[in-house]
Amino acid sequence: MSHVDAPPLGLIAEEHVDALTAGANLLGSGGGGNVALAYQLLRQAVRRRPVVVRRAADLPPDALVVHVGVVGGPDVLAERLIDPRDMATAAHAVAERVGGRVDAVGIIEIGGLNGLAGVVAAGELGLPVVDGDLMGRAFPSINKTTMALAGGSAAPMGVVGPAGDTVLVTKSSAALAERVLLSTAGAMGGAGALALYPTTAAFLAEAGVVGSLSACVALGAAYGEFPRTQVAALAEHLGGTFLFEGRVDEIRPRDGALPGSITVTDRVAGSAARIDLLEEFLAVTVDGVTRACTPDVIVALDPTSGGVLSVGQVRPGQLLALVTLRALHAWPPEADAVVGPRAFGLDLDLEETVR
Image 1 (tube, helix red, strand yellow):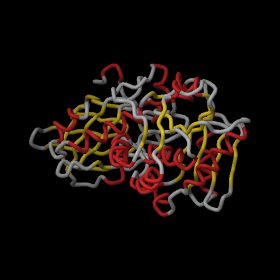
Image 2 (cartoon, one colour; image 1 turned 90 degrees about the vertical axis):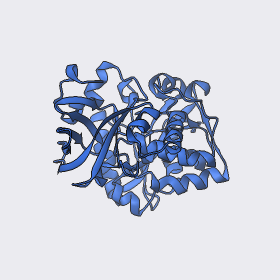
Image 3 (cartoon, one colour; image 1 turned 120 degrees about the vertical axis):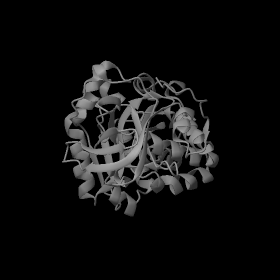
């Protein structure tokens, strides 16, 4: 269930685009891909026709929902944004494999680029988009989802390249699915349109993150209406918590699957914070006490402008403010092995973590 109370949307129209983009950027937790890449596509899609929004529980129980987005490296996507028609092709290929037709489009992850891509795909298909997603933020792999935790399979999965090449993976284990997708996208030039996790609306209503699309728009609207340079007050306005502000002293890059880190110091107060990261920010530890960790949403802001910073935008000597936002989903304890810090190679003492 969603933790954030937001009025349910009936439509995504042109007046929602800025707020959806801002909210998806915040919920990316420093990753999830560049939302600006899909901004114009989304604006064009809803200018032609607003996208209907429906919660999974309000759809017919046997309605087929296919989750649609993009897969690939951020650099490649920046040079060659996915064509909405390719996302539609991927969705149809998956639906045909399960012997049905797509009744609604699901959002894979509400944080980052895919938070917008799912709405774009729904617009292209002329179908409703589900008010929800499978992560409640952005995560770096497609097995870190509520559907996977509930026993749902990512397969059949469809990937469509820029030349129309279509690869359909009919069956895959959770452990192998991510590698299969990335190798397929690599063979297509580094990125592709993606469709996966076909499911009934009834199952999704129980297994998905409920209301996260509406919550994302509400979060982005709140961010846009508040003075952004007052970071502590902004965090409170967003329903989050201010963690730390200081200057970046050291950046230790990740080593493959091993997390990297950023050290931020407040020399006046004599305090220091460590930010653990991979594609996204994973944890913030202040003076030896872990103040936030995955699956919490961690946001890095430029305190002089209030702009949201991705992992790749942080530079030595830069001023940085850190905020954590309320999670959109209550992950059960057994999810720690999938989305908790140890799933990312972080040895944090959760019993002493301040949550």
